Length: 295
Image (cartoon, rainbow, N blue to C red; front, side, top):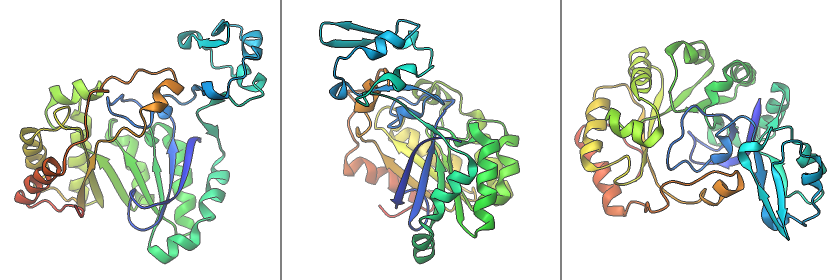
């Protein structure tokens, strides 16, 4: 499995105290994503404050991705061949890979370190991303090993894939955390670069199956959510078998990571929704008799 981060004592990724594993690779590119390190399975990262200007990376790079202008280190990101010889050559940890390749048994060993917290809080493990279903074969192996050990499992997914990707995993998943980023097709395409038809279909399918499902709605005001769009989302969710709906207010905590991975952040002008706007979203959901998390 390609893992970018293991976050312990997580309180926002399912019930109880959880260990959240962020898997790399994604088939969407949401404008507001705060995990750009998960965009691709393997990516080069660069922290300029750590660079000593030794030029070791320039010497070993066969693609000319590293150049120096005086003391300034420039990276031509589109020329990186992902051989990571520069990472090996860098003695100052200025260059690094976004993800670590871990065998399933290594993943389980890391999860088991937190068993005492799971038992005390009715918590467990959450596989997030990126899109964890892009590593579905390895994910299935990890989920099965967790269930053998009595560990509660959750998968945090955007749902942008065919039904048969998720189906074989469901017996080993206790709760599916499913995104619903927009109901209107045009809004979804503008914000994520893809259609939402498979996503809405997966929500309907999970509801029909009676699977324990929580819906998570990122709220980036006047980008993917307005009151009109929230009404449409609520109208779609009404009558579905949904454990609860969580609103995820926009924040900018991940913006600085975009430069680290040579990415452009495209909605820098966006502002977090105010309490009043979030409150209005909750009121829309409640009016449609949709269970919501605590505000």
